[in-house]
Image (cartoon, rainbow, N blue to C red; front, side, top):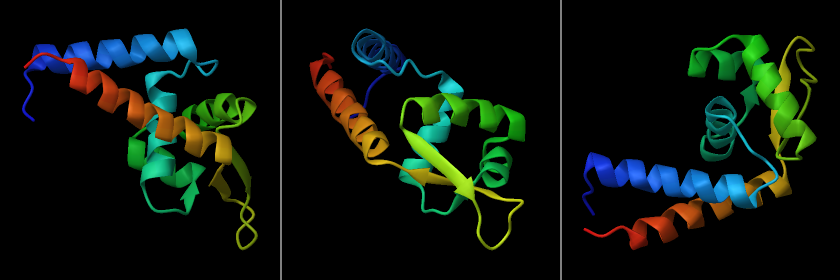
Length: 114
């Protein structure tokens, strides 16, 4: 399935619009990137590791995690082996959120006229 730039933007727009209307978790682009990284890439994930991987500061990751933690999408705890590290953990609610997002994208992609 090849889509042009305009169709890709429409897909992004339509999925984002649905998320804003349907979800209590109105995530920013940074929060979404953190969430998808944690759920799509092999753990373990740490604040330090996510900051380095995504090219942002540790406080930026912490702020994103604060929001997602309040929404139950992720949780965190101190690393038992190295108390300086904060390990990011997946939650059932977060896994369901990411899965639902994937289905929304597929559904909207099928609606795009080629």
